[in-house]
Image (tube, rainbow, N blue to C red; front, side, top):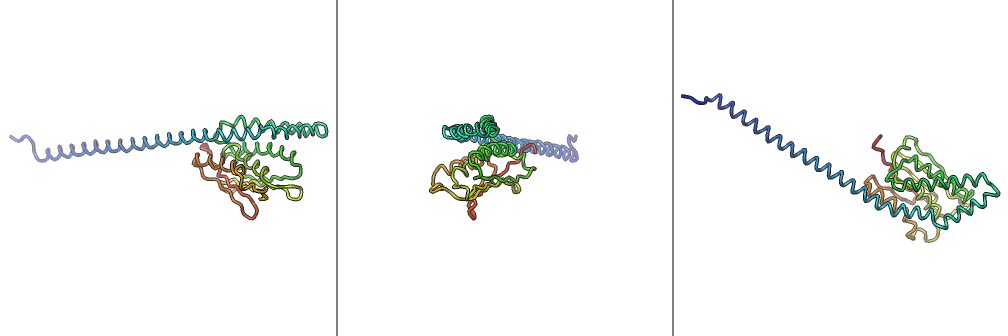
Length: 248
């Protein structure tokens, strides 16, 4: 009596082989997909940690920026300008208060943000520069040529204010040598330039680099490119990477 024949044995073992092959392949595929999942989760957690570190690092920088804006010397200059304008140019005094309010409002409402649009930063810059124009009448000039297609790109908040503040604080300028600041875009870079005429020993002081270090540190933590700071042909040039919004 024959229990199995060769054909049936062959079919049985072929079926068993393919069944085992499918099971093994499924296990391997599952392990592979699970490893990818774990890797993605790790990257997400790493990104969250990096962003949290960025938030913590930014707290001190933003506090210092707010402190600089709210310090007695800054407020004294602002109130002194307002007082002198009230009697002679009341409309300009009102404009000054409005722009000052815009600067404070932006600083307070965006202090918790990691990134803001270039459009928002330019609005702040306009208000901040209007204040400086009143303080330094006829001594400073701002030229802006920003590609409108880049207005929705992102940068860390207060970046432009910090750069302009540094230029004003550390540059010698008068009616014979105006401080000229240019802002423009090139590809996915925001370029800020000003004529390089530093105050004595300014380059060597720690205060000159605080703003630059703050901006660079934020980009390092965000892992979104690296800003550069150069001096060429008596021009101080800063190149800031523009970060593309995830919604684009």
